[in-house]
Image (cartoon, rainbow, N blue to C red; front, side, top):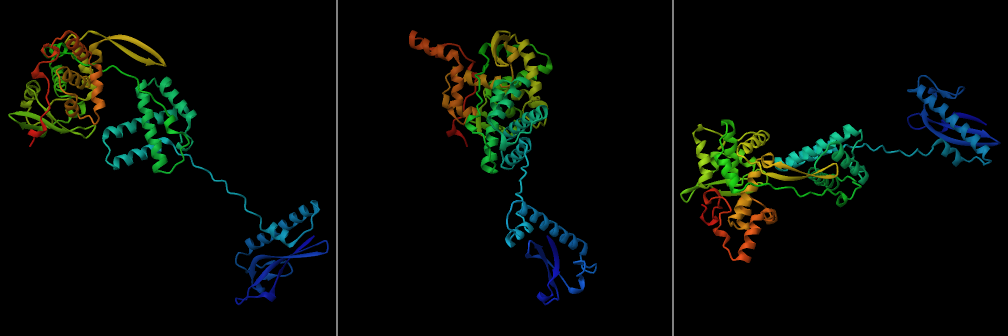
Length: 439
């Protein structure tokens, strides 16, 4: 078989350029096929069947003709080996092979990078800092997993097997508590739903199958006797302020974030007394809380500090919680409390003195339980505490054993529980400001 390249001068166009044609001879057959190249007769060397150096891009064009001749030769050998008759269609197919399918390389995306994008999207939409901190913590645990296990977590490949590996890492390598893991799973589901619904990503796992069960935890609260012991305890100067902030929260039900942010502008006059009006930091719910004599005394105690940005001398939460355990120890809060923990899948129970469990949030539990003990309606307590759902407030009703005992005594023994001194003094419990009396 031989191949030739000829210049078809009989097909010259208006620009004086002629097409270059490939001609193949074999077994008495002659097949012709266009190469797609064109040049002027002066740019073509008929003896060498190649472009002259005066042709622009002559080297590349000649290499192309060499490639065509080689392709024809290989095609002819394959046809002869397969005992097939060469055809023009076959020759054209050999010179114009079907392009190999392009294999799309999918770039994996780390959950940690996308989670940062998710957090910024929530920030732009005005979500509270509490929610943003949860998203940041979720990102931290996922980032630690990728670093320690060397496995990239991609939402498009996150399945139940991957989820089990992550949970195993959090529970046994990081020793996270049951409720911390449950919060992690809840946040992860929110993030994966965002990937699927708002970013159009294909998330293979069914979100309902990502389970994280919360375990019931002890909601410790202080009794009237505990509050009296705290009030009269002899404390070092630096602990006195910590004790006063704790008692103020016990009288108002404020969270740490809210008492920390209290300013003089939150104080308002009402019916000859004072009330606090504020928007809660966590839920952004507006609440109005009546200040009893005990609560007002604490505010007045620090009014002489001059122009202050905040009403009370509140320390950083971690520092305050550390000092509160010392305060509780000074006050003699040593009664044993049974604490149940789940460590590496095992349920462990141990007794610890009450002061070791004392935190700033204990005050909020104390306010709720003591309010119920003194007969505050649950609906009113819900408004004071700023709960969006009454079910949240009812949790406290379940843990107040004294309330259960009072009710049973009144029903079975016909005794008036209201006459019994089972709660704090009336001056120590906060009342809700009647909405009708508000300006």
